[in-house]
Length: 317
Ligand code: SF4
Image (tube, rainbow, N blue to C red):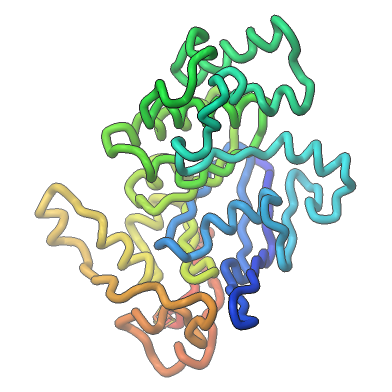
C-alpha cells in the first residue's frame, strides 16, 4: 500500500500569557498508508489532538510539512486546498457539543454536501438515507433533532456527517471518550466496518489504550509534544520499549490476575509537566525511574529497533 499521509517535523506552538510559547506539538513525524489506522495515544496535554487538528489545517502549523497523497498541503493553491479538504474529515470527541441542536439530523449530515453542491433535491434525500443506513440508523431519523438520540447514536450521526462527501482520510479525535463503556466497542466496530467497506484511512486519537489496540494497525505514543514510540500494535502492546509506554500499558486493568502478576508494573507518578517549560533532555525524565545523567543533557531521538519499531530513549544503545 502506498503512503497516503506524511507529516514531517510538524510543529504547533501557541502564544500564551507573559510572552511564553506553548509547544503543543514540537517536531512530530509519521506516515500513514492507504487503508491503515494509526492510533495516537498519550495522557491529556501531550499534543495528540493538536497534532490531528494541525494536520487537517484547522490550526495553521508553526513549522513542518503535511503531505497528503503526494501534495504539499501548506504550499497548495486555494483550489487544490479545497479539494484536499473534501478528502480529509474529522469525527469529534463530544457528540453532544458537536451537533447543532437546532438543525435536523438530515441537515447536519448534508452540510458538507450542501457546501460543495454535490447532491440536490431527491438525490440529496437519497444520499442522506444512504448515509444513515451506513452508520446503522435509518432514513426516518433525518427529520429528527440531535436531542432525540442517545450518545452512541449521536456519534453515529457525527460519523455520517464525516462520510457525507466521501473522504479518504478521517481523523477520529477521541470519538469514544465521551461515551459509556458499553457503547464504545459498538462505535469502534462501526468504524472498522466502514473502513473495510469504504477503504478509509484513519488517525485514531485516544487515551483508552485497550480500544486503540483493537482498531489500530500501528500505534504512536506522544509525550509533551513529541512522539516517543511508534510500532505495529502487536509489537507495541507485547513489547513496549519506552518507559512511558510501559507505564501507560501497566495502568490498563486486566481482569485475569495471573496475567496481571506477569506484567511489569511501573507506576506512572505525578502529572505531565507544563509544555511551556518542558524538562531539558528527555521530557519524560522527571517521571522516569530509569533516568540517568545523559537524560538531562541530551534529547533522545527516535531509533529504529527493527521492523519499524521506533523508540526515543537513551536506554537503547
Ligand atoms: Fe527515561 Fe532517560 Fe529513557 Fe527518558 S531517555 S525515558 S529519562 S531512561
